[in-house]
Amino acid sequence: MHFDDRLATVLALPVSGTALARIQYRQLVDILGRARPAADFGPLHEEGLIRLLQLAEQIPASERARMVGDADRPIANPRLLALLAEAEPQVATSAIAAARLDEEAWLALIPALPVRARGIVRHRRDLGPRVDALLERLGVRDRALPPVVEATAAQHSAPVDDIDAFLLDCVAREDALDQAKAQAAAQEITRPLAPAPVVPLRGKNGSNDNRRTADAGIGAIVRRIEEFRRARESGNHAAHSADAPFLPLGDLVHEVPRGAVSVDFATDAEGRITWVDGPLASALVGFSLSGAADRDGEEADAAAPPPLVSQLRARQPLRAAPLAFEGAPAISGEWLADAVARFDPVSGRFTGYCGRLRRPLRIAPVAAQPSADQAAADNMRQILHELKNPANAIQVAAEIIQQQLYGPAPHEYRALAAAIAGDVAQILAGFDELDRLVKLESGVMAPGAGECDLALILTQTVSRLQAWTAPRRSGFVQQAQAASLPIRLDCQEAERMIWRLLAALAGSTAPDEQLALRWWADSAQVRVEMELPAALAGYVGDDLFAIPAGERGSALSAGSFGIGFTLRLAAAEARAAGGTLMHEGGVLRLDLPGLTGPASSHSNNLQSRVG
Image (cartoon, rainbow, N blue to C red; front, side):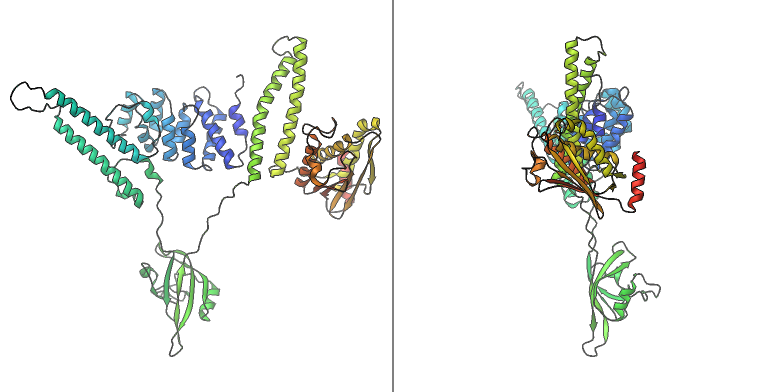
């Protein structure tokens, strides 16, 4: 490969949906994971790392961990590994498990890693004695699971998905090893050499001591498993002791604020709270709803808007009346009051309010999900992007042969290369038109703003088409009812759209067939009507925009995908410009918004600009 533009291609791809974000994240991990910082890293790779951080905000941690663990090749780039190690525990575990660095790279990387990531690195058993010694010097020790048995590197490099299953498996392996040692010791010490009582042969520290130590280790592990389960169910991190092992899943437990969302209350005749149901009674009793005075005779602690004060004075019912308390965290903030006035049943005297205080319901905004049409448009743009790369490569190779850039080539090869380059150019032009249609219909692209004279563009386009229509005695008969049609659209955009329409119709005319072309200004918009040729007059409604390629049209206007696609693209351009393109009764009608203001000034400006 002479030019490796994979990273630039991925970074050039716009991220307009979650599906494309996942695809780009996977591609960046694969490409950056193979780069060597000393030789291959450059500004483009730094931009790739920044893009990874941006994409991480759109993708859940569990999906990112799965994509990192399922990468096509192991991560051989310390820069990428350091970036992923600072992410969530799931992502860091998968990245460290999938990393394949040499010993020198590990020695240089580990001191820069977070403490949590160093603990994950400790589970790797294939890093060499120098790396293990460095971890010991940095104070990283595997206190939960000491190395009891030799395991393969693949077992330790796999990410831990279920911590309970992982720890129970270690307990089972430790118990099996202990039984194997006991059987081996029994075979050695049960030989009947003398009638003396058989004394069990002790190991270095004594087999009984080893057994008690193993039992104690297994029991400690089981107790820690139970502690972890209880802590995960209760959500309380403080339940772990100081010697408890660090569990990667512990970071995923989020503290949920526990606070009352509604309380019942009652006030006296002055609007001061005298009774509250629940644990917030001591914090709320004494607050004044009307803001007259608090329990200490100082300024009020509840902000009561003027409408609320009027309602309290008129003894009117309160419906979602806003209040704001200042005090303890459990009561501070905004509240809504629903209450009714109370009256003495004997004297009829007003005695206060009774009701309920409640927290306002705050609904988190839901991110708009891309529609099915938007997702289909994103997929089509992705496919076009993938198809353009090999087409460009073929065109470059054909031009190299045709121009003999690398040495002389036979004329037959040069002729074939020129034909291939021309075919690829037509294919790329079709890809561009298809990409433009997808962007216009999905709203990603908008036509350029500007001012132009549509009447002048129509006249010039008809003149350009006469080189093809004059020998056939066909073409357009202009019936202009306005000398100038100023519109708010860029001149190049308008010329491109008008050329597509008129060329498509002119290419479908028969010899000696003349088509009427009319235009005029209608209030705030301009209208152009184009008569359809006999070959297209039989289509009804939107069927005209669905003519398959090769069925109608000629080399003048059919393009790569036929006249139906050409008219559909022109209709999309018209809609993006704020107008419409419709087929009614053998006539193709184009409506575009016109410019407001004196027509003469617009006409003069546009004439001078074109001239």
